[in-house]
Image (cartoon, one colour):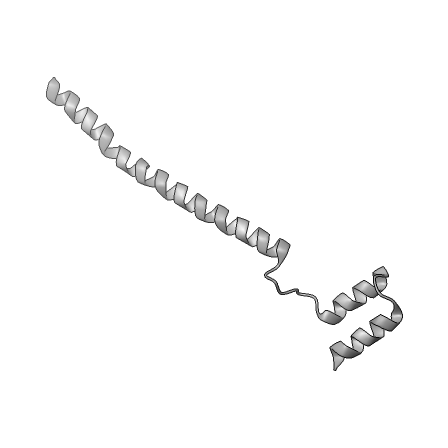
Length: 82
């Protein structure tokens, strides 16, 4: 009877290693996924210091918004294009 209990217990614990490994693989994969997602989100939000807009596009946007006048726009445009 004692031997039978040991075998059942041993068999139960024998399968637990698989779930333990699976648990840690899922935890590590989750951490990697969340880290990549967070970094991608921040890179898209803040940019990597390099704007996708050209300097001329930014200048045109500032002119349209009224941040700069026509004279300043023309001068800056000339500087950019030269």
